[in-house]
Amino acid sequence: MFDRFQDYIQSNQLCEKSDRILVGFSSGRDSVCLTHLLHRAGYQIALAHVNYSLRGADSEKDEAFARQMAKELGIEIYVLNQPLEKGSNLQERARQVRYDFFRSMAKRERFSYIATAHHRDDNLETFLVQLLRGASLNALGGIPVRNNEVIRPLLWADRTEIDAYIAENDLTFREDQSNTSTDYLRNKVRHQLIPLMSEMEPRTNAKLESVSNRIQEHTETVDELAKSFVTAGQPTRIELHRLPATNPDFWLYRATLDFGFTQTQCQNILEATEAGKEVQSTSFRMVLQGDHLEIGPANTTPPKSLMMPSEGFFQCEDYTVEVKPVEEALFPKDNLHICIDADQLSFPLELRVWKAGETFQPLGADYRVKIKHYLKDRKLGKLQQERTVVAYSDGVAFWIPGIAIADHVKVSNETKAYLSLNFNYIRE
Image (cartoon, rainbow, N blue to C red; front, top):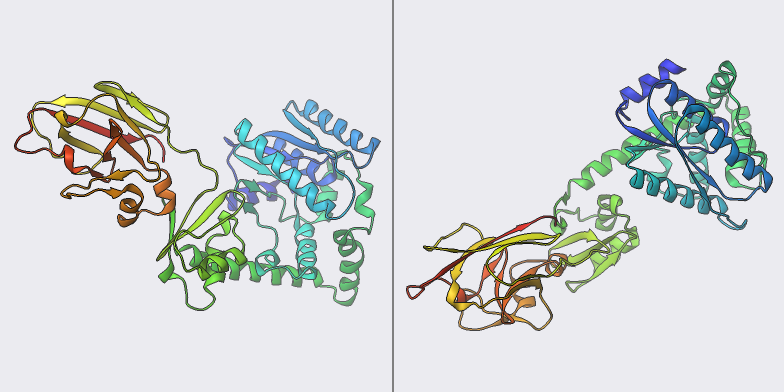
């Protein structure tokens, strides 16, 4: 089993020996087996255990076992004590708590991956549970061997192989008595439905696994096509004309799976008639901008303001600006670096996000327009507009970095002193 375990990791390119791996550890046989295999193979691991306090003294013994395992292996362990009350959706609530904890620890402690001990039998049970619940095709595709930072190095092995490895290596583990209860749908599938199906058709497991694999292959093909509609950037962009005319909400849903939007949200935004309509998932916003959609973080901090009391180099966490006099006019190729009439400005200068109602005089124009309307005319979407900074002198806008300078600061035949400003984003 050890050799097959290593081959599976390598063939699926799950991780490298240089990666740090956080193992979801329940103290049960599967997580004990996974931990032993990873440690034996020389991977850099630590354990993460959640105590839900659902089983009284047994929950405390599970935690003590996990801590002892970490001590014996000489590795770190992270424990979350999060009491849960029994009731509806208990398993799903526990799963949410567990994965939230794993991800927060992985981010805080800089682990490359989170390893869970799902195996082949879990995959079959998941397929049947999802089928009984009327789940989507994506869910019927089974448990993925990799899901972003979560890897499942035991997904090839069945319960019999795991039991044999435990016995061969004389490993101890904690038995969760709730696994034998038929109060939960998954346990009913495991202890009642699968044995009945196997009695009717001895090759049930292999046949259902084949069906699940074919569904997964089909959904991967669909998702590959759907994600070709997405243009990565700041913000992410989807051109509406590229979505297939048949079931566009389905294709948008598949294209944005990584952002967490529901198919209903996708349908709602496609049915909207006004630009600016938006929907929000847990972590992202999707905004309709006429002929395209933009996707960006749901909770972003606006760029910081920056005061420039004189010439010099200035920096905040979002961008840098260099202000210096030059002897002759420069004509940079973009509006991140400008050369303007120094006599038309007075210090201090200020860079900040524009405010509603503020105006700007475009280069070559003899009138002023609202900055909001000007940015919209320049095809900047709502998400980009919210992060656009503008330069001011005496409260008058004279430069939108990367976009344009105002007419009143342009270099002319009457210009006697020149000022160069160079703007660079640190992060977008």
